[in-house]
Amino acid sequence: MAKTTTSVTAAGRSSFGGSIRRPSGALACEHRRACGTDGLCTDSDAPIPSRPSIDRYRGIINLQPRERVPLDWAATQNNLGFALWKLGERERGTAKLEEAVAAYREALKEYTRERVPLG
Image (tube, rainbow, N blue to C red; front, side, top):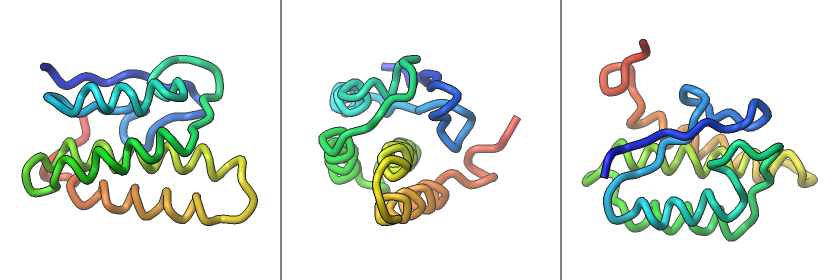
């Protein structure tokens, strides 16, 4: 299965190129469930992630080791960060936003200039 990207609304742009990257292969179905749970991979207005979608992303991360599929792992970390960020915007405190920053930092361990050059 080919790797694909899907645009997200202007209010919910991903930090990498304005789109959510979906893993390929066997985990693609689980990823569709995670982003489809809340409309994160659609052009719906202001998608609001829920804890089930965040739990699914965390489950996908556990199923796809960084060592085996580093870019898919990074993409899922990025998508988790996006979901946590959107949820954190609507909650009191900064816990979810801090988790989002941590997930984005994890993604950047694989999204390097050498591996994923811009342009």
